[in-house]
Image (tube, rainbow, N blue to C red; front, side, top):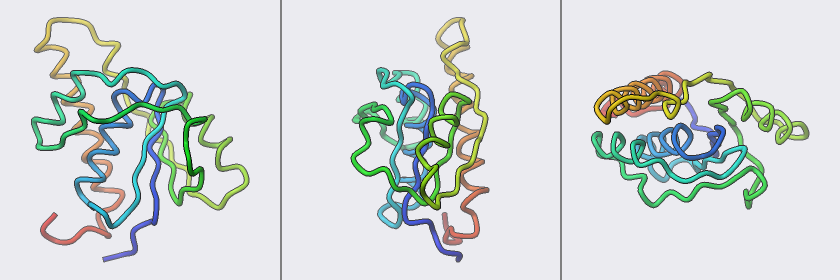
Length: 147
């Protein structure tokens, strides 16, 4: 296994869907072996569809409280992963004076999809699964074989 970064920050627009999902996934995979947080350009309300699709895979994000970049208590992270263009700009600003890896994973915002509950949940599941796949691929050399 490779070395895990000491800390990872996921960032999106409102810290309400994508970044809380990503935070929950990485925490689920690595528990207390890495510090994981998430943030938004703005702090929105946690999305109930995000909570529902994460619960389907056994990850509870219901207690997540959204925060903006300005609300971060600690602003040093080894890796900052942005999930929206707006968040990428803030991440670059945040890390301008630190030796952090900044990655941009353009990820669809499922809140823009309209339709009935089943149609919307389908899109949220797709976003969740993309994040799960990317996180596993990014950190796979650091994962125990049973993960």
